[in-house]
Image (cartoon, rainbow, N blue to C red; front, top):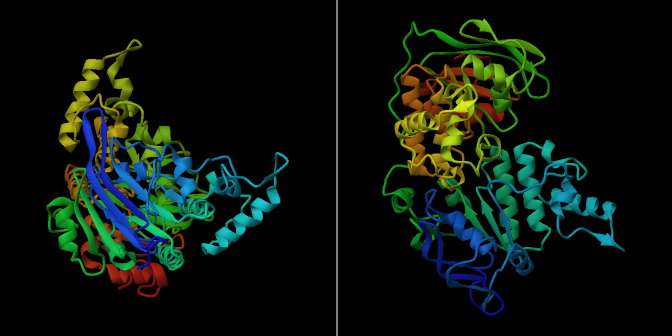
Length: 512
């Protein structure tokens, strides 16, 4: 493993303490990272990972402790100080600026200029070189970044980090929005960076990735360091999970209770087509049934959910709810008819982060708490508290700002919103994205309980084991078409991955 010019580690964080009103987020955390290594930082949501990397990125100032970079003590008064040292951060919730081009985002804050004028051509050429280095030369530097899919936005964020000649890159859940083949490309890039002496702090809830790409592991729990320098390739998964959560099992799926044979059909999709995304898609979901969509990013999974919900207008086909056609593409109509959507990007698309938990939960059903223009706050809070208790949202404080909750509890808030007003159909897009292994099991239990109560659930997840473990029935998608359908209990991860990657395991839908 490489060291710095002075022979020591590149980064040493010692005894880092950070307090916020009412909470000690970091309680003496230690982290040591060497040049040229992939150092994996693990811990549940709320363990302190995000706060620690924000301290290192200069976004938060520590209340105590020391940071040494390249052997010298440093004070990072802001993100500019961190970037000047060569510390770049790629956050899970990408901080790109919609409305600007890809090249503008990559060089934001250090644009190529001459005599006060931006040298657009030079920036576009430099952006193209960075994108090609990342294996995505097909992304136009002039494209508006807000129009790119999630995977493309992730690539642009990585290119921005590389544009700063970074010596240390922090990657927070970098594979969350990437397809299986794109993860392999990400790992290729990381290996090239570390071979050149760049250090990478890698944060992921996918423990199999840690084994493949990591060198050493540091584990945080409740704002403290509970393990340092564990070998990533030799430490048993059970040991890591126990350190993080006290549990010995990474995924715990609730027992399936298949819907009754006579359960009514809630959703029927017939011949739905959206050019460029999916073609001639047909399926149904019964009351109390969980149907999962398995496929790569770009296979049309999320777009199908959005078309069912009315956020996209299909070119052909129809959607029926309780046997009645849903006319037009309208999310307002979908909500009125009894649908609810938990989108992939919950912070950007589902939550009002600066508002209270209560306001986020009651958002879709405020009409039921109002009379003659007056809002009955007491009744609103009572109903919200009932849902928070039912879903075991922690802390159970409806007045707390929703941004202060962990990822798993934020997701429960999104579910509580739809349950408050009663739903016939829930559409869940990546319901456990960015959620730690402990909170995952809780969410699995919540989703299964909702189905047992008669709600129909249509689920999308990039994690095949999650789809197979939760869904009563699985639809396998490839290039916008359903290529296979089977009960979740009859499929295994290897065969599903073979179908979605190669399209060779099965033929048409329903063939054995």
